[in-house]
Image 1 (cartoon, one colour):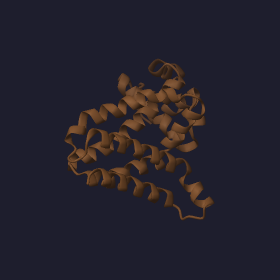
Image 2 (image 1 turned 120 degrees about the horizontal axis):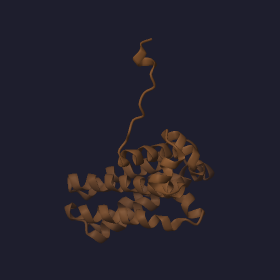
Image 3 (image 1 turned 60 degrees about the vertical axis):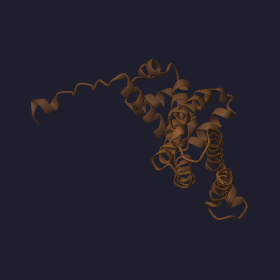
Length: 202
């Protein structure tokens, strides 16, 4: 073993933005693995490979981490849907690929569990910042969408998020309970949303 390889490596110094991203990535990993109940300061700091004080420095508290994580996840989801529409200029694409991408993200990433946890613990007011992020994306790109008004697209995105949250939380267990095949709740929700957009753009 060389002398160089035996020396301890200098700790990598991240920019504030990179440090925040690293902490949020660790928090998201915990959310996916075991749910929002394990989004605790010690666990997030350990997952990010930083001291507890570093998490507090960037977010103020574990509550701040949870809020920032939810805002980032929602922003990414809505941005993805709007980006698909802006690229194609076709409302049908939003209703198809965009909706499916949104549902996939909510079902796979556990965002629905975190949103429900905030509501059930009386912390729904944190969603104000999420609403602001959604509105920011809509305002920035809505004029690029062909054939769909601001109000209609805003309502449509609201419907997508609402249905996706419901499917992400209750789709599989309710399907089992009612003797329906897996994925049936998702299919029903997508059908309702598609019909709503079709009726609005006729």
